[in-house]
Length: 297
Image (cartoon, rainbow, N blue to C red; front, side, top):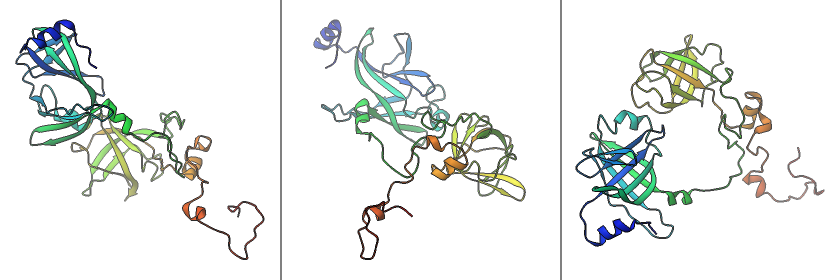
């Protein structure tokens, strides 16, 4: 049930036409942007909600019960509001969105209509379309742990415990050139064995992709030079001279945790869990049936 100010309820009951919608988008980097479908900017709680921003909202499907509300936000890519470079950098992925119904004559009178976050963002022909997901959508996420052979921690998180700032696992480098197949010829990794950073992450320090992250597919040497291959293309072209930091890769296997990171005490997988073939096995004539472990040997 929505909390509607008494004075605003009276205006709604009278058929007032001084209502507009406002959206507050808070990005992952903490930047808050306000937008309104009114014909002039509004100041609400110290935040300026810009008009004529090229932003509009599709009809929200306001559901009851535990069904997830959903909707769409449509807009033009604007140089001074929502920029393509920021979308490409992932700053709007998971951004918090709040929608209000506001009396533009009395901006302090408002009703909260929607609270959620931005889901998938699609770009085409100078415009974007963003999916809105309500907080109820979080209830659809799987909870608990799945028991697997591989570790389910993330390298460097609290469950893993590896210090990813240790120079043994991370360093800075520079792009010297780009190969025809897209592989990057890099400098600064000479002290590390080939394949050390395969499965790791590049964080761009300078260049058009500054601030973005890229997953590493392979880390090899060829003709005396170090090559990094990325799993997917970057939002913008990588150029010679771009600098980056790089984090070692972890394939989540027990042997890697033990030999590469010396961190097996914190291994979060179950390397000895029986496989499906063992679970479906049955006694055979001629085998030793002494009640001991079927996994021994």
